[in-house]
Length: 135
Length: 439
Image (cartoon, rainbow over all chains, first blue to last red; front, top):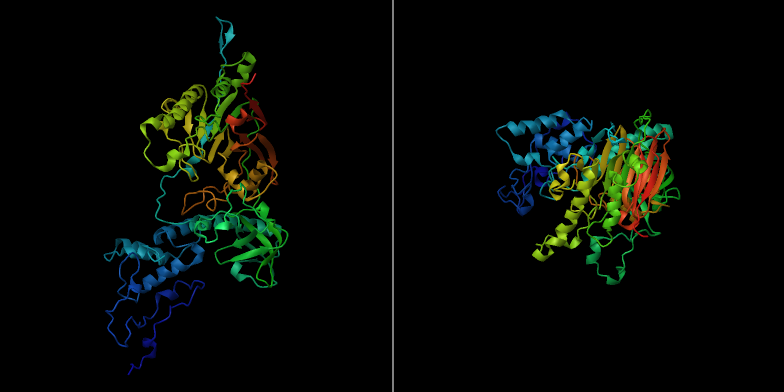
């Protein structure tokens, strides 16, 4: 029958439900990764079955549904209404704009974005906002 | 300087120190990445909200300021947001797809107001319908940021008891020590290339301004004109040419003749005094605001002179430390379509009180989708505010609550009226110059 882990059976909800006030930057850095249920009709099917719904962010297939803490912090920055709309403007540009307006955006977000630009794992999709290519 | 041999004095034209401040309207570094207009509205709301928040304590110090989402029924408070006016007669692209053909009127009215219009206030968290007799929708348009005091009703509307506009921006003091009269001439709507253009009438204006007309007294007056501003619609290029299709050789002349004719007149003008030329809705410039300066290649003759300055629309400049801001008329014409006032000058006053040159942009007025700024915000109140291509010459001296003094000028279309406007820099007095070729 099913494995004993009932939480693993159902698709996990978003870590913070719905539109909320932004949590303080320190709490988002330590989040436990949880198991996700991916596609397929049968329980226990291999992760390889990818549906078109998982194609995101400029056409690159999101092979890992789990996203790291860094991406989580970046998405929180995207969703925060205080810094204005996120669609149509790059994350770094939006951060610079927020800084120029005196809104004091979280510094660690900028560090992540600047680090990505110079790091070996430069992944261009991280510079685009959460909804890029989807809306 | 007197030429003693001839016994005649050579009159010298007065000079004024000119500073062009169009930089914020020039599109240089902006890159279009597919963004929409949410960003310009966000910048506008953020900027205006901080201005209003500094004024609210003096207005109603004991009331809390809420967000729209934070409204509680029956609780009196203040909310700040962008106004949206819902107008059922406003033309919408979706009407083309409407199944009810009969609902579309065949004749387009010039004004889209109806008694059903209502106002909605919106901020980042949500929007709420504004109710109550305090805010008459006919006096407002989409895109202005205000603060309203009232409370949420049981129907979910916000009943307005009072409202606050930002009011005239602070003004830099005008220099009051000038003893001599110096004049600035304004003209707009020359429409070279149409049947309405009368070359003799315009030549009279050119001759008067350059000092080739009249006796010594009149020449003395002309020598005091330090600047000419042409506020848009100097030419009229038939809109059929803007469709992007190749122009047949036989039609080439229709395209280039008006431009060449205008250049001949302009060369006479720039040889005599500094001239600022702004684009208008009929000129060969981009459609959306801010319109970029007309290209130098259009004016082969005039652009050789350093007195020739091609400007943006809106145009901001300084003459002897007097601040001038003006447009070619699109901002006021759009207000006229979506709201009501007793005259065009009242529309101009409202834009100053709302601290925004073109509040209906981008809703009904074409505008560039800026991401990090809204260049039409008025941060410092000008001393002279002019609008071109209007029906008639009107002017008023507006006094603000903080000792601001603004000369408002509505410049009429020259091709229809033959009227240009003269402004005295010393005391901001204004009068009309009328040219007629009728005997």
